[in-house]
Image (cartoon, rainbow, N blue to C red; front, side, top):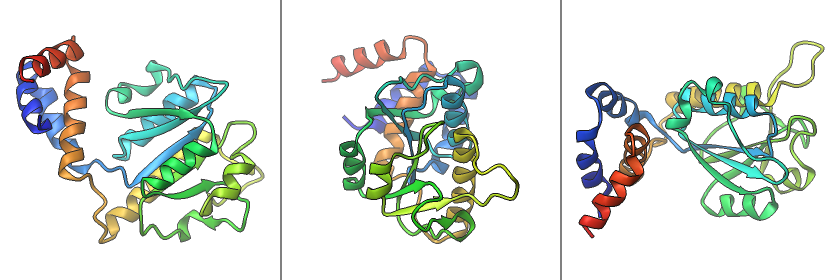
Length: 219
């Protein structure tokens, strides 16, 4: 069943204000930049990453989990978790290889391996930005596998940003680069309708049950 038909059905359960917001912001959404987070353990950092990514119009992240669950603090996200899809994968090289096979260039945000400075980085294809753990940074195995490394210029004695700050800076800067480019970086029509269905379901009380009933009645 087409997602457009599903969304048109779900519209009746949305407030006019929420429907207007979905229709306004959806066309600007993009998965051209995919933040990939390595085993973040501080829930405030997880929440800040979700909030920053959503503010830049990127509505999906990958959380690679091993010892820690990606569990954003909802008071910090300010509702951004409604809009951002979090795909949880094992914290492993296999997960990075799977993302690469989806068509993403793997870019580790780290100063190692002759990293390109963020202002000089040329975005010409979909990129998966890998952010390391708060304490250790990007793991060596992913650094070795990455197609490129990316560094944020530093101008003080402090030599690194908090992971959530780094994610915000990179997401914002790359969004600006995309907006100035001629790249077709926005969602395809198929992905757009699928996302709008997810947004509608997340916006409706008992949205999952309403959707399940509709799909059952129209199968």
